[in-house]
Amino acid sequence: MNQQPQPTSLYPVERGDELSLIELWKVLVEYKLLIIVFTALTTLGAIYYASTLPTIYKAKVLMIPASGGGGGLSNRLGGLADMAGVSLSGSSAGAEGEQALARLKTRSFLTKHIKEKNLKPILFADQWDRVEKKWIDKEPSDRDSAELLKNMIEAGSHPRSKAGLASLSIEWKNPHNPNKIADIANNLVSSINSHAKDRAILEARDSISFLEKELEQTSIVNSQTILYSLIEQQMGKIMMANIRDEFVFKIIDPAVVPKRAENKIVLMIIFTGLILGVLFGSFVAFFISLIKKKD
Image (tube, rainbow, N blue to C red; front, side, top):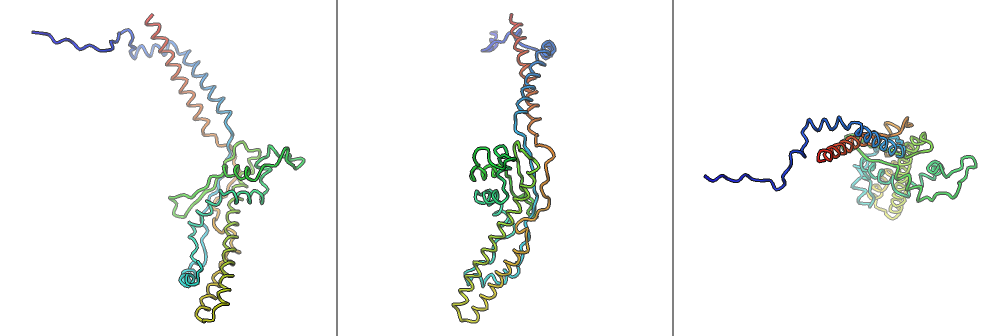
């Protein structure tokens, strides 16, 4: 009876090249000093790298959409306004908030805000002589100022919030004065409200001017009644805007001065350095052990 030949491996492995679990443990114990050295070096390198990272301070504002007024009047006169060519519906509180947050990062808005609050000496404190009250070299451009502030802003609504909760955060790397961060965040919300308020008043006044011209050109009593009602509605908009400072957003939790920097990534970097040191040191130890075994 013919015996079947035993299958042979294409890559024969010598038993001498293999390391059992016990042998692996012996290697780790034998070269523990080497592993400790590698671990210490990579950990120290990670600590040094983490120390070179910028210090980030963060201030956050929580807000909800301000409830709009005059909704009932708008509903009653909506059809009449369409007949006269005037839009009264406007936007919902949530939609107005989304528009305001989108406008927040526009260059025109930020440039105006920076000028109104005189933020350039704060944003570029390293270029500003606080004693002489002048720029050390040349004044930063409006474009650079707006771009810097834009990159510091993180704003958005919370999709799962039924109340329309939104937040605005300022993250500042290596600030010269961390105490200013909360003021910048809170003042940005005030500027959003002020900008939207001025815009609403301007649109209402334009609508009144248009309606008054239409009123002069018609002698039909019914049309005059409609136009008077629309003018009254627009005047109501102006009145409501003038008495509401929180026009788009109402702050429910203002930003406060951050007590310490946001350094969550530092611990991750140090931990990664520690793990890499252990792995690399162990690899070198096993490699040396295999070389000695072959010899």
